[in-house]
Amino acid sequence: MSVQTTTSISLESRDGKGKKMARRLRREGWIPGVFYTHESRHEGALSVKIRTSEMIRILAVPGVTHHLLELDTPLGFRRGIIKNIQKNPCKEEIWHIDFYGVQADQKITITVPINLLGEAVGVEQGGVMEVVTSQVEVECLPDAIPEGIDIDISNLEIGSAVHVSDLVAPEGVEIKNDPEDVVVLVAAQRVMVEEEEIEEEEEEEGVEPTIVGEEEEEGGEEGEK
Image 1 (tube, helix red, strand yellow):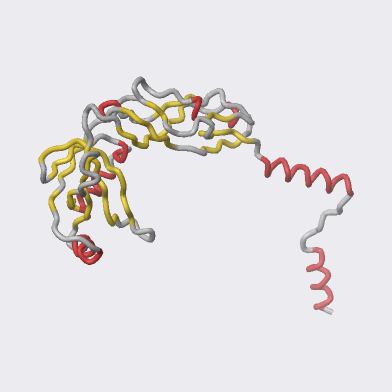
Image 2 (cartoon, one colour):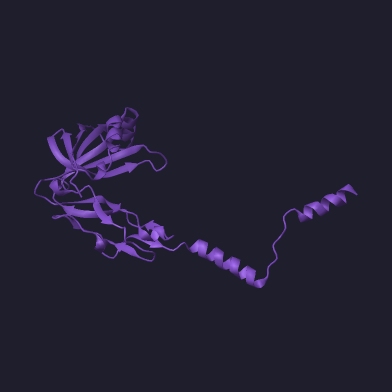
């Protein structure tokens, strides 16, 4: 649950709006975006752009989308987070990015991952583990953003589940998800059980097995006659 480190991003001012302008910027190696704060969200965001190569490098940093960032904006240095990323649904191309500026004394809502620790005993017993919720929304001060929320699943048996209510957040961090939401569960391997039941039913009914190649051999003899 350690607090994340800071990554720096350089944002430059851009002129113009609209799809035509955005396509031109992307062709020239830029990603269009906006920068706004809680105070400026009603007055209008600042139009910015960032080098595509720099953004690809930044997004390669594990968990950067829930990190506190050092933003070098046309207004000066600001602390903020990546609020939203729009991508081409058919490619990995980034279309647009929203950056949100934060204040040290102002709580923010941000998504962080859930870290599953240990090996579920139910899996060792032959069960199948299913992760239902891999991240949660938390509310906290910018300097208290955790790397993630840890949960030990070692004692998770077949038929058992971990819910959001079982998660323990660090001091000063509040989890906003529904407490009844399932995080992870271990279920029995139903397919294997059904196959075994079918085999048992066939044995009880006296179903004779088919001998592969028997008809082919008979057909071959007829063809040689």
